[in-house]
Image 1 (cartoon, rainbow over the protein chains, first blue to last red):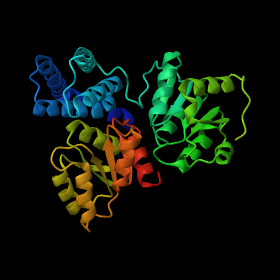
Image 2 (cartoon, each protein chain N blue to C red; image 1 turned 90 degrees about the horizontal axis):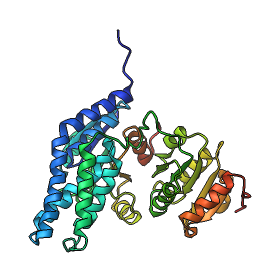
Image 3 (cartoon, rainbow over the protein chains, first blue to last red; image 1 turned 60 degrees about the horizontal axis):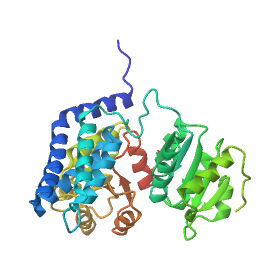
Image 4 (cartoon, chains in turn red, orange; image 1 turned 180 degrees about the vertical axis):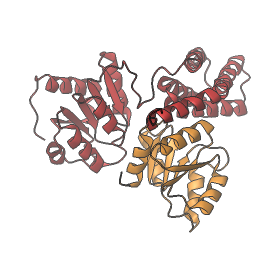
Length: 249
Length: 124
């Protein structure tokens, strides 16, 4: 008698089956984007074809990451952005967009390699830094961490953060307090994360999180968001490595 | 049993969301456009609705307006599903329309139910 299947493993297998069944349609959507770019190069792209290509890119952007292709989602989103708006992409932009489309196709023709956002591969390194933030600052922090070669994880909401924290119990944590759920969940997240970790919070001066509340929640330091990603990361690493004193709010 | 209605023109996302919600024992029904989604909401009275923003025909905001106009569906909590949820301006604009929350696509399989709970203030 085989043991009861793990529901998560079972769900992932179901997801893979959906992907395999839909693969041809997925690649057809890439084809719509490629054709639109080819038409644009030839000067024959009409509004209807551009809208169809934008829609195809939009669907890929929204779905690919869930099926294990997070980079493909990002590529598709960039293509979607270039295809929307009042005018077709400029001639100068077309070679770069064609390259994006080629990369998108190559990724989607392969096996899921990036892993679902919640599904670390067996040999995935444990993150030393977790960035929690949904906006541009979160993007910039993650990009800066990647540039420095830091193994990092990213959560875009308070709801998504616990699984990242669970995967990396000792990680340094930087929280952009302007989270989608608002100030209460953001402070609760800081409090949870601060148990056994160094947490640096970043706030908008016009935001709802009061410095005293952030300190009480356990953040080692509170930065203003205009500090920028590189300086915020420098400060957080200094605190983690013992080179910085905790600042009072 | 918690019953969620998913309204999204992407078959991939409808199936992925149904699988993700099924993992926690929730029942997911889905529709591919706003018109049929509103009809299903009226008929089935789901506990909550996950609503795509950009759809052909009746888009997400117009679908939400229909749901809010109808007394039989006005109180059903709705969360938008959008690939642009990381954009604060987009998120703020959607929240102003009266949705309970905005959930960003792509979502993680094991996190969607938690995001839905958080969006609607439901206990785990």
